[in-house]
Amino acid sequence: MHELSITQSMVEAIAEQTGGRRVLRVVLEIGRLSGVEVDAVRFCFDVVAAGTAVEGAELEIDEPQGQARCRQCGTTFEPSDPLAGCACGSLDLEVTSGEQLRIREVRVKRDVRDVRV
Image (cartoon, rainbow, N blue to C red):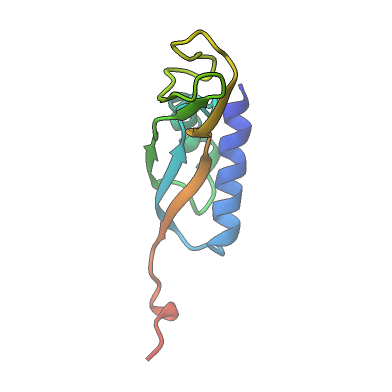
């Protein structure tokens, strides 16, 4: 299950970038054509976040629909899965969106020491 290592890498990156401040919310963007199982990421998140600044953070995952263009007939469409073909029967596709896997937003707890007067 590669979702475990993906989730681990994301949690480590978030903890590193936030400098140990408590993370309240994480928003991920996982495209529907990325090949990543969103439910598995949700399941792994709390486990890999335990004992880190990310522990207890709210997790939101956006799943943008994919888009592809058929190189044979030029049709643009939304494939139902990463292996879908065009209605014309061609499998020669250019995927234009839906493969993304990124951390889109991280909200951290404000600390009074961070406020400058």
